[in-house]
Length: 549
Ligand code: FBP
Image (cartoon, rainbow, N blue to C red):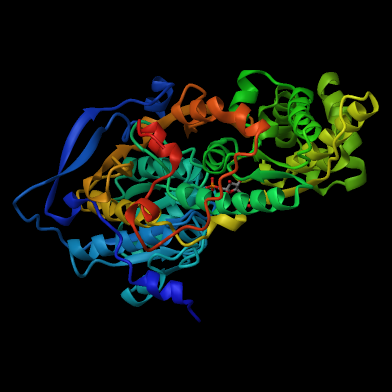
């Protein structure tokens, strides 16, 4: 494989570890835990892994004598910068525990475990991937591990390779599955520990114990660079409005972080739309008013940031999508139907109000709403072109206002969708360090015999050497939610809190950003140089931890 100069220089980067992990450590148990909600149901479903204590590593003087331990690792779900560093941290940690420990990577996601597809990860392979983006070291996939037959099939290969622990690197859904698997193997006394690592660019796998999911920092920095470039372009040519949709599934963390970094003219936050129960027309009117105000002052340009999941939060669309989810769950062969007949078929099966809303949508968006859900039952919001829908509707409204003499500007829209551009970027120093530490911590949880835990690294707005490593019981993050038409235990998603510091900071400034041109051009991620330029975490994390930006 040909490597770039940056890749060569980056390979030599030694990720920073919390100081504590450079010494001999012992595990200290904290308080017993309970799930965030639905405690009775979760406890019943996880009798063997419920209520375990929080864990923290502390320095100790004696040298624990661990034996070699074979471990398997799986990358699950969407790519996020830093996945290779979780694996290299895990590898280094396992080798430090005992030089004969082995690490096996299951290929192309959880499916690799079930299908017995794996490779042994050797020093040569690991060294090639240190500090690189992507998940290509072993590939990723979205196979949902939920069926005991899959767990038993996995157990066969784990036994065959003498694997005692499995690390699942994934988002909320994958870590939910990891927890189900941990419970199953523990109930069966199978002798397999399961540890999770918090991954997702979406930033929605976080809580009081997990400060951030890895990949969010890098992905937001990449998108912010691109948005900054577009803003500089539109401030130079002054003739386009750019409607930019950003990945993030249901949560608007990515959009909010990018807004804090770039100061666009408009930024929609799905969670606010839901709280204020804003209709599609109200959202369109809000954008059109900003365009009109700027246009009437000679500024026929601007930027609008749109979270990927917005459509699910608009009340009339939410109600429609809930009914569509049940409709699709009951109509397995819908996707096989003649495409020309699908729209009428849907309309004839929906309740009258939803049928009306569905019928009013442009053909393309209506079709996108009925695409297959992902294996976890999520609507594939990345495939719904909300940015085009809004640009089109704003254009129509402005034409109307022009006829009424309320608007004198010119409106030309460009649409963009940023998601895949950032998911495999070379990890920022923050993500490189954080991921390596998560992987290393996972190895220590394994050595200490733990299962049903997520690796945790806290205090992350301080320099890496002050970070705190430990484990959080995964059941602690769970609640019951409706999936594929049935109630299931799942890790609670963290959405943007409207009373949280990141949103509050944005809302103080947004009126000024709308009217004036206050763009910030963050430029590319800097990997080498002064710490205040290269090692800063996201603004979201800083604000959430009470720091200023
Ligand atoms: P994860 O939750 O698996 O981390 O997914 C992140 C994500 O990038 C979302 O932002 C996006 O909606 C989705 O993956 C796209 O899925 P796919 O990779 O299957 O196209």
